[in-house]
Length: 85
Image (cartoon, rainbow, N blue to C red):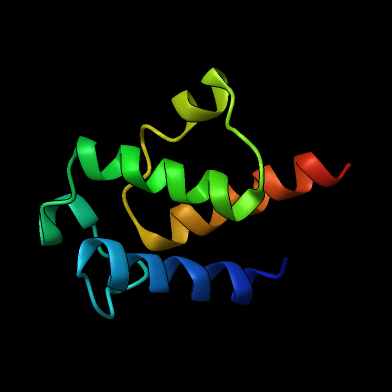
């Protein structure tokens, strides 16, 4: 999965699941869109679906400081590489 594919899929998730359209890639989602911990849990579920596997406890912990779309894409890219190796 390329970075562009990941970004495209995440933007679709934000539009369909969180009603956030065209967020800036480096905007703080918590500050700008009131993206909270419940939303973050839903997003982790969407990431699991995207990757086709469950996240480990450590992988979920690693997501706790993510605040932007670019950080989400970095996170998914790392997880996808880890799973393909």
